[in-house]
Amino acid sequence: MAGVGWVYYTADDGALRTIRQAWTSFAAEDPFVRVAAGRSAFRISDLLALGSLLDSLAGDGGTERKTDGGAETVKEILPHV
Image 1 (cartoon, helix red, strand yellow):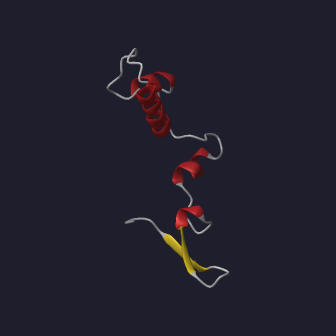
Image 2: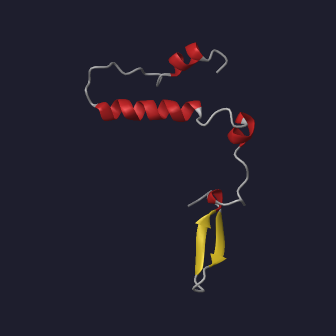
């Protein structure tokens, strides 16, 4: 995959293996994690995407979908966003 860092290592059986760098201590710290400093486990954009996914899975058609993906609701709750 382009843009994905890999760490190569030799397994106990002698085979050359790879693992994503992001899954190791060799990865650079995520800027969001550094700035959040443990205060937030989720990014707003990820929560909005999850909400949209859950809405689409509900499939009841009874709720009107917002075209902004709920961003205005988030801005009402968190005006500084």
